[in-house]
Image (cartoon, rainbow, N blue to C red; front, side, top):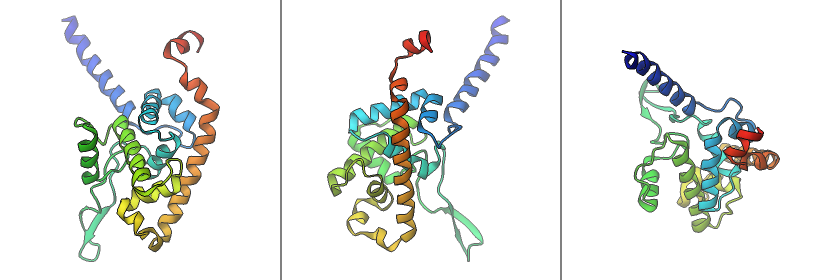
Length: 207
């Protein structure tokens, strides 16, 4: 009888925690506030950095631009008949990283991360580390160059080689915004990295 009373509340609590875990950060303008609120995100970002050699502030700035840290973000709808009838989405991009289905499949095939999900922050961060690392290998773009990395991310490696972004002034402007945010995130992260790197045990006893 007691178990019956406890279980419903237990599951409600679990679902509530799950909802909090997938919600965007309260203050996305400050990377320190993001990671203090979501410590597991910092762990994922650190793992990505160690695995791919990609500085944390670059994919974080790109992810903010792509999805505003919404786990289930979707691209705009496409319309037919003079824009009167909605007809699917403009692309297959989805999730935190707004990765397209075909590119995500390439990531899964190359990394073996077959259980990955575009709505999972850890997987999305690892995907972006993989993509940025590939942009460095294929097009020689520095992993620290948020501007050029974002152009690769948006246009693809072939599009970047063809300089398709030169026909899109708006995209170059957005890439500039990503670059500025990455610089801001990098500066902010320097002020809190030491605190973030402290173990959970240290935080338990010393705050």
